[in-house]
Image 1 (tube, one colour):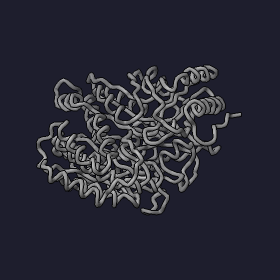
Image 2 (cartoon, helix red, strand yellow):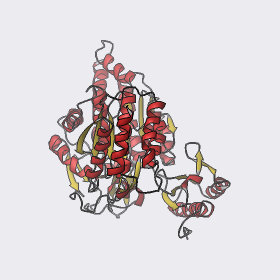
Image 3 (cartoon, helix red, strand yellow):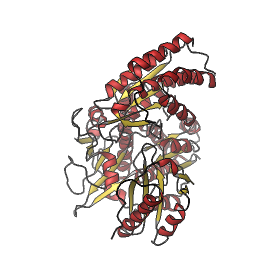
Image 4 (cartoon, helix red, strand yellow):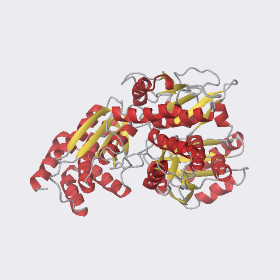
Length: 551
């Protein structure tokens, strides 16, 4: 890159997208996320970084404009790496650096990145795929990203309003040279729905399973896009849609959506409150999924990410055994996983379990250690990844004379199941089709699914602090090493309660500390959670009113 090009980038940034704040912003688990009014210069700079990353990797990179489950006034931006995965962790530091430098230092940081990674193809016009959610602020931020891409000589391709998983899927398709699928919405729906209908066959209902699902779209892109899904699926799956308000209604994620149902343990507004009906909710950008129902006593029963993981892993294990092929199946969780689910997986399913720090990038990376890796966060974000070895072994054995007709049918079923999955990233739409496939195959309603094991009561709280960076964790975020002495006090509190477990971790996006508590009874959970939250407030620089202890 010649100096004139750098000066053009700097001049355009100073004129159109000046950094008009001294507030530092950090690239976290989900990229940058804050008030939409504070993001235009950040998104412009991510357009620059996406092109640099593309030239370094010699591949198409994605830029997704979304704040997921956050309120409508917020927005965010994250980069998507070549195989549809999250941005490589080492580049998160560069993203943070380029976002925070003053305008007059932007030129030097771009030059520093070029030098650090020996990027010598600065005249190549690599594509950058841009997607956005339904927030009113998203179109202008997507335009800022496109300006950044063009300023440094890249080629922006705006896909308009898409789910976050769809953009990840498009990027993976493009870089696999369409081997993974066609990089557009038609290709996405065709691949998933063709495999789903093939697995379902002609029998739409089976046993206790009925082919109707109540769907909460969180008044976001998941509502908009499931309308196309309904058209393709036809009678194979009847989706009753709710919370599909228009853009700018102010109702995005408001008292609805996957995060609301999971964190508040409440039934979403806008969905008919009928007993014993199978319901599901997605979040604002459709990468999280939870299932639930209300019983005859108006009690909510939640099937979160742990339940999704155990259902999927158990079914894949069943099919795998029927194939007679020796492949390594494993499940990856975070510390937020319910202790009852971990015990069920290890003792009943006898599937290896790994625990990693919170964040999809950590789960996805660990899942790649297995031939078939299932990973889900408790919030409902997750998927299944299949290694090249697994796929090739299945394809080879499908043609083998050594396999019986029954084994070949199982192999064909597993190959079709792979096509229902979006391996690039957690995808609420894909995961819903996967869950519906499994429930249909087992002949289960949601109550039968719930009977597999009984969750331990648990609660998630958050404490606002002055500086989240004083909190440091180890052991997959299950234990604190700072502030000094806090972990010992948490240990003392948890030891008072049967099956007590609690851990705290700083948020990746805001100055809050999240407190997880688990115990044998709901009353004990309330007390334990409040006690730990109060300790965090006292020793961690809490802001505002101290948490009240449960009576």
